[in-house]
Image 1 (cartoon, protein in one colour):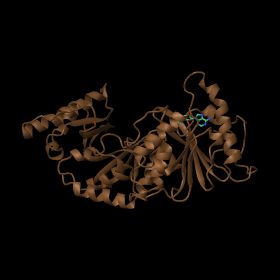
Image 2 (cartoon, protein in one colour):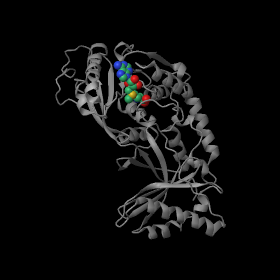
Image 3 (cartoon, rainbow, N blue to C red):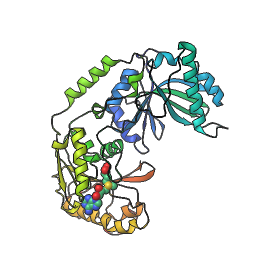
Image 4 (tube, rainbow, N blue to C red):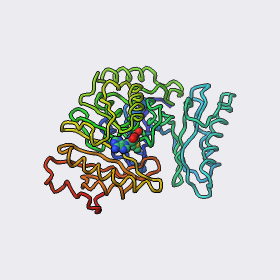
Length: 400
Ligand SMILES: C[S@@+](CC[C@H](N)C(=O)[O-])C[C@H]1O[C@@H](n2cnc3c(N)ncnc32)[C@H](O)[C@@H]1O
């Protein structure tokens, strides 16, 4: 394989994030992006392009470089097909490897068996061609990664150029309750129509600070991958290290010294704010975010144009829903009374609670926060409370 040969690059994302991902891909020169599945989008490109996507995509999980597609019916046929591929020419000598993916085929009871056969095929091929058996490992961290996608009788094999998902930017080391994945936070900002060059940002329930940190990076045009030290493509044989250095240099030059707009983050819990500040420090943006400890009703509201984004608790556990209902009603009140002229984005996995906000969203976008089906509710809070799109306060109707 010549790394400059174009192939299909399959970019994966969380459920509900494909729209944001397609727009990001278009902005990076891929208007041709096609939906493969609800969590995978395809574009054309070579390995250097895959490196660029790893560096710049905010809403993606992984960038997969397709090396083969076979019609196969059984795991043994998969094994036989996979041993024909020159893995020893693609994977760096001595690198451990990791196989992951999904498989659905008649008679296949456990997809892990297909992954195991794939792993055997790669190791056996190495032994045959080099005399040495490479180590395989269950963790993608530090390994060359191979992704299998076997559906409808076709097994696609990819070199996974990311390995550890791109959501793990590396800045969020301290946990707090129910944090958003970094790439979901980015997708929320991308879907909200927030303009990082013009619109202020406030996260008044910041938790561990994910939304505010992602917003600060966007407002500084900082590539999300600049922070990460390790990618699976670094365990490919003769990977284009010079091209990667060039991409990193160009990304550093593009980065603004300060966000173009004010970014604020606050939380009622001082421990959350301390953690958010610590995470922002690691992300290199602590100086650029105005942190505060405050109930959201007393948090400073940005001057318009701006976005207020929140991820309140969903109350999945019994009994919590009732306790949280007044909080959601208060969010609606606060948006109505203090945030006229701004936009708001609220992600919630509880439709009953979301109704309590009592405002009519301009858009409702299904998004999954891990296994929880959520709605991202977007509000245009027009100045002047008589605007007909604005209020159906406490109606408990079907708005959300
Ligand atoms: C689900 S967490 C947010 C997680 C965050 N998106 C992250 O990525 O870490 C909800 C946050 O809302 C905060 N919160 C709850 N009630 C609040 C209130 N009245 N005012 C401000 N923050 C509040 C909680 O302290 C908690 O940190």
